[in-house]
Structure formats: structure tokens, C-alpha cells
Image (cartoon, rainbow, N blue to C red):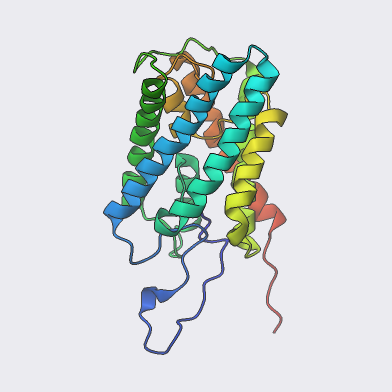
Length: 259
């Protein structure tokens, strides 16, 4: 979850340090981590994230009929699960688990700063999507549900789409804002807390993630989304990413150095 342009690089530790020994972009790829390991971390991390979201949703609906309690259980599990996954896998792949975050990092790194390259984007994004689908199937399997059952939960209303723009823009603003202010060490707590809050203050319950949205279409349970709603959600998430980057550029504008 990184913002290459947003994060200041550091000088090499010693005069003999290799040129790529600069600090990675916020949440970005440590330079010596093999790409296959990073791809595996993104796939497994996204799979576990979706398994937490879908599985806790199933568990909640089996324990109570109160929709408010169902959402509380679902959001609480997601907060803890996401925080742990970022803490564990962040040092490996940056713990993006989200194509919007990956694309935003690539965009901010396009001037040659640290961050993901187009080749890495081409590996990360499919890994995230495959992981999300696998996570939904795994959650269904654990609760004895059909492994693949298309969701019938329609989420195509305009106010829900607006909620996705807000949720995704806020997520990008948070991640890249932390990077600009050199506070990315707080990302596991901050990002998880934001998602937990956005479950409640956005009308869409804050998917804010194209890969997770695709995965959730494979389960007709509490956390599902109908395939027909996917295009609108993904489009609004991408738009939210653009809005989030614009807000980062505006709020964390760099001043000129004094002569």
C-alpha cells in the first residue's frame, strides 16, 4: 500500500551500498524480495482477507437475525484480520491486496522513484483477483455452503456507488498521506481502523477494492455482491482512487526548499 512519490527516499547506509538500497516506497516492495514471493504474498493475503470478510459474514448471519449485529461482527472481524495481514505481509509485498492501491503506487512511481513497475502491476493485480476468488470459495467451504454460488445481492443503486467513491478516495488519501508524512509504520492500525469505520459511515459498507468485489460475487451470502453490480462498483473504486491521489497532491503539497 504505497505511494512512491509520497515517500522520501533515504541515502545509502554506507558509501558502498548498492544503488537500490534506498528505502522502499510506503508499503512497497522491498528491493531484494523475489517477485514470486511478492506475488504469493498478494495472492494469499487477499485470499485470507476475503475469507475473513465472507466467513465472518456467514457466521454472523447464523448467530443472529439482527442486521446491525451482523454488520458489527463482520466489520470487527475485518478490522482485526486486515491489520494482522498488513503487519505480516507488508514487509514482503507491501500488503496492497487491492488493485487500486497497486495502480496508485505505479502512477506515483512513474517518474522513476521507488514503487511497482508495469511488470509488477501485471503480476500483482491477477494475483489479487485470483486470491480474492479463492478466499470466497474457501469461506463457503468452511461453512458448508456451495463452493461457487453467484451472489444475488444487488448493489447497483446510485447512492451505493457514491459510497464506493468516498470509501476508496479516503483509503488512498490515508495510505499515501501516511507516506507523505513518514508515518507508514502506523499503516496496520490506521488502514484497518479506517476500513472498520467506513463499514459504517459509507452506504456501500466500503468494499473499496476491485479484487475483493470480484471475489465477493462468487458467494451468495451476507457479504456478496451480484455480478451485475460489479462494473459500477469497480468503476467507482477506480474513480475514487483518482480522487484520493488528487487529494493527496493538494493536501500534502510540497513546498520549495529554501535557497
